[in-house]
Amino acid sequence: MIRVENVRKSYLRPDGTRFVVYDNLSLTLPAKTNVGILGRNGAGKTTLVRLLAGIDRPDCGRITTEGRISPPLGLQGGVAQALSGRENAKFACRICGVDGPSMRERLDFIHRFSQLEDFFDQPVRTYSSGMRARLGFAMSMAFDYDYYLMDEITSTGDQRFKMRADEAFRCKRDRASIILVSHAMSTLREWCEVGLYVKDRKVHYYDNIDEAIDLYLRDSV
Image: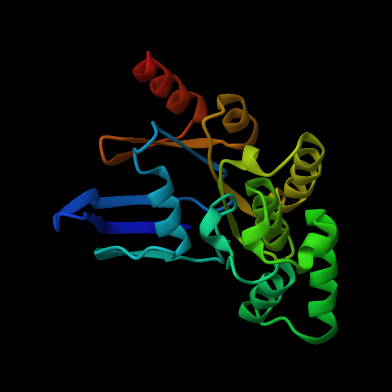
């Protein structure tokens, strides 16, 4: 279970004023439930994911969880641009307390799964956006989490890689929860059970993903 309690999040504008994304936001995400997040561009979906992941901290309020949450898959800020793919993977292993032979196994898995070949030892700044997404996805699949945060799963690469990613993620889904941001309604229906509709700096929770999608589509007309 993830609890968001009285959270306020704002960002400083260049003119010195603050843009408030969320104010007094509270919600509870049940365990073992796959959640779809939808809303218009700029509504605050990615900010919500970053808050849940702990990448961004709220101005006030708190977010608590009973399990481990993955880094957000699909966000470009998840890896260090100056380091190679291998160095980023090693850093992730150390954060997760993995070393020795187990680290070598994880690195081999990330190298194979990402399909980066020789680029695995090149700086991430030389990668295309698809290559960075594949690296981030492979790194998260190498570890077990209770919640997997995914920002636009469809950005993970070409069709062949997407098929491999879907297969790997289905295995994870059997013992973990998915929190997925997507503009693809078919993807949300396939992967998710409940929905969060982000609108007007508020997050509306729906027990049925179809209800959230219907309201979103109605507002988009």
